[in-house]
Image (cartoon, rainbow, N blue to C red):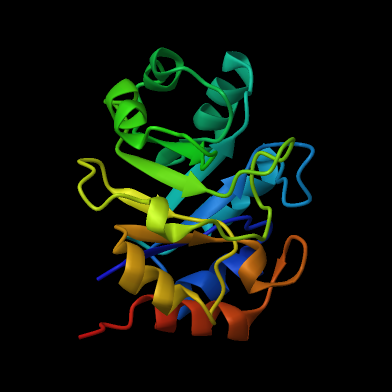
Length: 206
């Protein structure tokens, strides 16, 4: 069954809503320009509120090593999501499981990317939009995702409760990742949208 990550959590109430809906992971954005940015001290409170077996993911975009290490030390996050131009060597140097986000530009060779980031636990595929590292709210052409990649694929980019079942059926990803598609406003989640998204993402289609 497809795993679900709800990203851009900024408070304990939304974190609880994600848990109640049956999602598998929450994402915390440590990228100050983002409207979903969360300070490490607030992230620590969110993580302390999580029940057992709920995974936590820290998202960084071209952050300095010192910044990443400080967040890891303060929060004890489970997994890192690198969403910038970080090298594979840099990503692997924190001795923490990580996934690498890739924006789906024309001509991209995902097989080469997979080989380059061999140390990653998975590859997250997001929509390419110049100057925007993520959270575009737009889908990309799902037919560009090959079905024979060795790494688990996490599908992101413009997903909502209305299109996630189709996305899962077509791409057959290991997991789906959503942020804006389940929001009432930027940085604030909508409980009904979260529940509908998780339900539709985990529908088993014949």
